[in-house]
Length: 211
Image (tube, rainbow, N blue to C red):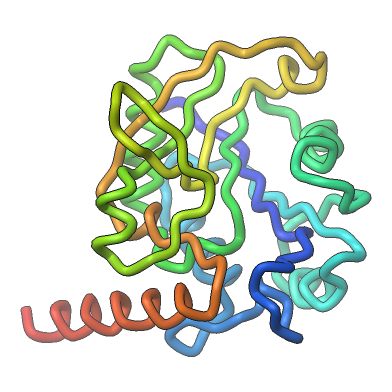
């Protein structure tokens, strides 16, 4: 089985939340979002090393993750692309799974679905998108919206990237996988999104208890 290194991006400013608590440490179901993302990665049977990128933008997140046992990579906090390149230099595998720390509903099966789908895509970079309809029906706030084959889609922030290609700064051929899973579709960018995540998690927990 092909296995991947994983990078959790946890060093952003999170300015859209307008809150004093750093976004990765905000709780859903009584647990910090970044913990839930790490648990999803641990539950995925296709992951080797998990690394988190941190920065001075989120010092409390750095301190919290220092006790998690995963390796941390310090970045400048200058933006997604430069921080991604810095973090990728610290990894070894050719293909790296990139996951943001603000997907609290993500699960191991979600990630296995994506990575298995990636293996069937002859592209250097493959990303996960959900339809705008899926995101808004769940009650979440769409972040980056784009058009694909006449339909409005939302980028979820999850991707597999070609490590050396990113470091070389060359163009990478892109592919997409489309999901309806709340694990990908609920990206927490506002307090309202936190409420949505709590509601969906509570509903899922009740359904599991009733089955």
